Length: 394
Length: 230
Image (cartoon, rainbow over all chains, first blue to last red):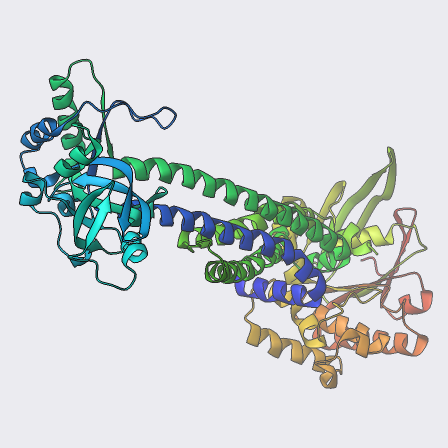
């Protein structure tokens, strides 16, 4: 018997028992749409975090003293500007190294005030981080060398203190010291909860005097390409350890952050998919159950078909195709509902949802597979019937 | 020289029923030639149904030799047996056994499905078979829309559509009133005479059996009397 014929027969059988077919499919539909939706949410969350990290800039290496450990307070830094100069020599290109010293301070303009993160840095920051300016200019070499009291405002700080007025050229007071605003950054959003739009950038030398320290918090290096990240990271850490024997230094790259977070979110997505997969499994059991009922109901028909010349494999094929058709149609409907549901969630809620082709392909493949897996037992039972017994069945 | 439609030698069939062995057939020798019209007659429990199942290749003998169209069924696999049924035997059952939600035309075409005949040709042949049993006006009717006599004629058309050597009819008039019963018997008689297909009736009614040219009486798993034994 040809496949087209078998398909036509199976479709007819499903059509005859419309309500039963629909109810049986329901389990598969729920399972498949759940897989598609949950994987879309998991992937969406992962993409959002990865975009945040990528939004920093590209090929960034962050060097901090001590060991990077989120469970302990950061090590008190012993690095100062001479160490930055040393790292610049190690890297071989001073423009690809920048520096950061940070402190929470109050900034005032007239009666308005805001609590901000004052970041001391230098003229090379825009070479490494993506911090586009909305107005004004970046820090210059002279700003840093002569400890000028100039400041670039994060977009939220500018909005809070100056409103619609252009702040460039105006005065702001940070911890009692007057600064001249030279620029305003574009809005960049938060990374790992660090509100970068609430930062103000001043020359590192000015910041050290303002805060009263000679140290710096960290060094950021921009690698020339993805391939250089790892060797450069190792070279810098080794050079620092050589300079300060017995001390620890850590270098974190975006790739490492992405890798860690990607693994965690990937696992989360997997767990969600597995939970959804369980409902698909339950749907499969339903298919198996209904196919067994169908075989029993149609025992006489099976006997007749055998008498007319149907081989075991014809009967087996007929019922197997019916089961697979049930789950495949259910799977297709489930995919449509799942994609629709994911788009709806992404549209009306803050939960990001990204539909991935692999989850659709997987859900479809699994629903076909469920049909085969759970259809085989009832179909084999049908094929193994003794025609004499089957013909006598009532 | 055509091989006999059926050739049985010392055929036995026993069943295990709850641990007890029941001998339904206890050694049957029987030859049915091509184009014969024979009736297997006997009371219920005589073994006539078992004999029909064996002849129809729905079942296998416990011992003895059975050749269908010259082929020893013991040498065939289940799949080959199914193909043999499809090619050489047409069944007519007491309760018609039509697919309820399927038109007369598709019911008749069903054996050809398992022969791999393309759809268009199946329909042509099924239409011809229905015309031959006088149901050209009932092609698209479903079984429930037809009388018992018409349903049995559809079943006969289905038995004939594959050009079998033998039609095995198990109590073909058992579910029909006498008028329709006579009509079905007339049809079987005419088909046997016209197309040369062998017809074997299984019945417990002497009047029905009397329509056949040969009567094979079965009792207690043995052939008691065979009017046409040659």
